[in-house]
Amino acid sequence: MILNFRQLEVFRAIMIAKTINGAADLLHVSQPGISRLLKYMEQKLGIALFERHKGRLIPTPEGMELFRELEPIYAKIEDLDITINRIVQADDLQFRIACIASLANYVLPRLLAKIKTKMPGIEIHLETLPNETIAEYIIQRRCDFALAFYNPEHPLVLSEPSINVEMHCVVPKGHPLSKKKSVTFKDMADYELVMFYPDTLLGKRMNQAFNELDINPKASVVIRYADDACAMVEQGLGISIAFEYTARPDRFPNLQTIPIKGNNQRLHFLRHNGIAMSNNAQKLYHLAKTEIRSLD
Image (cartoon, rainbow, N blue to C red; front, side, top):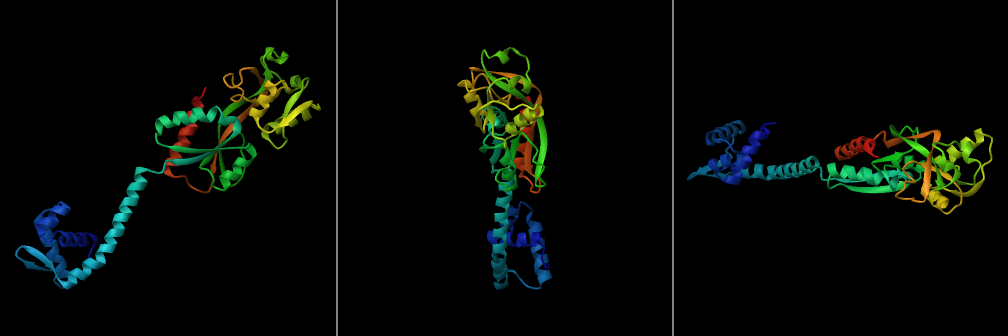
C-alpha cells in the first residue's frame, strides 16, 4: 500500500477543512505535523495533491479523484463504528426462555423478578412446554435456554444440573395421609389417584413405582400437567403427586403436600451445545443459574 491509513486520514481531513490549521483541529494534532505529513505524501506519490493559494489548499484533479475514491471507504468505516457501538452497548435485551409448567407459576416469576433487578430493561419471551418437548426447542434454536426436570442426553443439548426439587404427595386438607411427615407410593396406593399420562415425567415416575410394588393403581383421572392434577385433587377426585413448588398454599389453599420418601428430582439448565450465546444471553443464563439457588 503506497499510503497508509494515517496518511489517508490526514489527506481527508485537509480536504474537509481546506486548511492545514483546520485539519490539525479536526485530528487534534499540531499544525506542523500535518504540514510535514502532507509534504511527505506528495513526495512519495510524485504528484501534487493541492495547490497553495492565499493560505488555502485547493485540491488538484488528482487530489479530487483520490478523495472521491476515499469517501465510500470512510462511509463504510463509519457504519462499522456504529455497528461496533451497538454491539458494545448491548442493545439486544430480548431473550427467549422455555420451561416446564411446574416451574412457570412459582419458580420462573420469582427468578425473573430477581434477575430484573440486576438486568433492568430485559424483555423475556417465556414458553411453557411439556418436559418431553423442551429438548426439541433447544435443538431448533427456538429459545436461548430452558429449565427442565431431566437431561435429554442429546449431542446438541448441553445440560447443566442445578437444584434438587422434592416430589410431594398432594392431598386435600384433613386427608388421612396429611398427618404423616413423609409417605411412600405404597401408602398412596390405598386411595384413588389422579394419574399422569405415561409419556410425562411424573407419569413415568408413578408407573415405575407402582410396577416395582406390583400394584395396579386406582386411577380416577389421567392428566398431563401437575397444576391440573392439583385442581382435580381440590375437587375430591383423588390424590396425586407434584413437585414441591407446584401445590403451594398461596395457590392451592385447600391442599396439603407431604414429601415422598427418596423421590427428589434434579432441575437442569439446558442450552444448545453447538452454538454460542450472545454476551447478554450468557449474562442472563449465568445469573439465572446463580439466583435460582436463593429461591425459597
